Structure formats: structure tokens, C-alpha cells
Figure 1 (tube, rainbow, N blue to C red):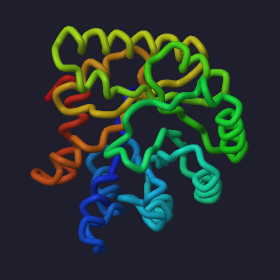
Figure 2: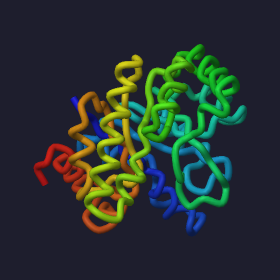
Figure 3: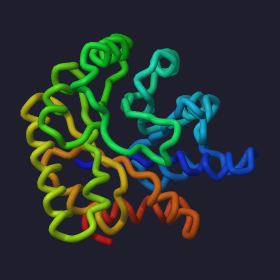
Length: 240
């Protein structure tokens, strides 16, 4: 059954805007789980612009579904993950100057090093997911690393300027998921998904989890976290 991972990074973004103690990401995670979230996702960035180390530690102790730690494949982050033991790790590209993650990782150009990162994490019993574009060469490289999952980057689909382009990007995601599953990978997806565009991605055969943050948190500011999460789950099933 398709599941929803709620990314709560932007709860911390609001907190860090004033360098204060609220809103509390852990409280947001509790409310999301009570509303039916199947997992909690956070991105611990190198510059700590939103989620902080203490947030991840507390979430590891309190999340009752599963905790997905998004992070760059760096020595610092691998060490943190090996200590905290999230339920799984999603390895993402990261640039200090970007507002949000701009695309999938390039596995092909960094395969020996990145394969070693997978070996280290999964050797510590932490399943690994690669955040990559729905590109045949990148999916093939992901399979070579022996990672358990990929997360397909849905940004191009979400940002498509017209219906025809959106259909083409959806077809690319469908083909990418098919290729990944045939290669023995499990498939998640995320980035830019909203209440209005999520359903076609949710219908992709073999899709296991959608990781969604900004749209849910934006709605939660207006209607509350629990309602925002419940309505996203309805949207995923085409019932909103």
C-alpha cells in the first residue's frame, strides 16, 4: 500500500527565522503521525539552515512510524547516521546556495565513492535510498551500488509549464519506476508534489512512498497539521 512520508523541515525553518524554540519539529511529527502519516522525513543540511542535530536526536527517540533522514553523502553525515540509526537514509545532492534541492544526484560520475557510502551505511543496518532523476543511466548506477531504494525526483513533473510537458514527465517517472523495480530496487518519489498534482504520481505501479513537505506545511499553517496531513492522504487516493 502506498504510504506518505511527511517532511517537517519547514517547521524548523519557521523556528530558525527567529532563532527561538518554537514551533517544535518534534511536536509537528507527533501531530502528523496522529493524523495518519506513515513516516517522518527530515533533511539535516550541512549549513543547518532548518533541522538541527538535536531535532534528529529527539525525533529518533519519539517517532513511532519510521524516520527517513535525508542527507548529503559526506563523511560527517554518514557518521551522524551511523550513530543515530534512522530507519532509512535518503542520500541527496546539496549546495549551500540552493533554496531547495534542485535535482537528483549524479551517481554515474561518482560511482566508486558513492558505492562505498552505501556499503558503509547498509553495513550498519541502515537501508539506503538514492534521490535521483528518472534517468535510465542513473537508475542503472543506483542498482550497481546495491542500495535498497531510489526516490524519484518529481520536480520536473511538478514544475511542468503545461499539460503536454507534464504528461511527458509523468511518463518518464512511470518508465523510471518500471526500470528500477526490474533491477530489484524499491521506489519512492518526491519533490514539489502538491494536493493538486499528487494523484497521477501516486498511481504509478510499484510506487511505495511519497515524501512531501512544503505543500503540507504550507497548508498546515492555515488549517493545522492534522487536517493538512489527512487531506494529503485523501489527495493521494484521488478522494479530495
